[in-house]
Image (cartoon, rainbow, N blue to C red; front, side, top):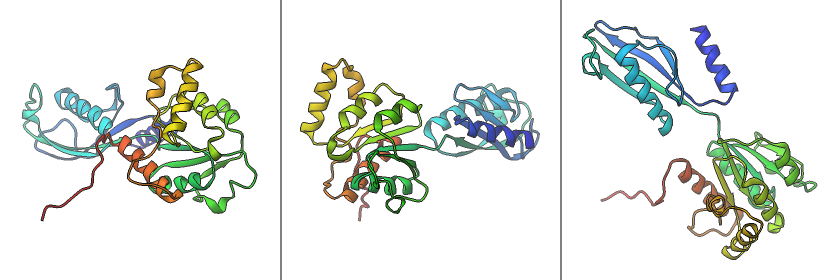
Length: 264
């Protein structure tokens, strides 16, 4: 069991996605007893075992789906009812725990809006870092204590940084002065989400310029711009809530955001 926990730590350090399956209870004859564990990867590979045979095949398939949904699952399996059946006659209760690398948000611009986004996103579960080259802008008093503050020019930071599918990127540079440059550098990177603040006119102008520079139209279509839910936003705090709200909707695959109303 110690080896398995060591392996889990290694996978987390490697920022891998996986699902831990734990046998939490059994009754009757079963191939494994409570406490048995296995680690399943997105491609269906498994390390360890929760019983082998039909139960493990079905559990592995379920684990892959659980990783896609990102939510834990508890499920009871009467073994004679699993695919192809098992003659043990008992039942097994399995708990699925999906593990994904922590979502990381990089905010390009540490001004009034960037600061509020940092606070709201931190509360919502993102690991936050803010990039800005201006002196005094990244004073820790303006940001969550856990936020990483990077005093560097935007282009240099992007050049020095490796992004992946766990990176969330939001562009809110001062007076939109560097928005086009930052977007041009980021658009070819790997990322989960890329948003840019600005008016419809400003966004259209930047997109037109980038298309003239040869940026693919399909790449631009992936950019959330103007970024943020359209529910009325004016102050930095309101803008931050709108942006992080859109990020949460994107994270959970919700296209039509609406209020939850109770019928009375």
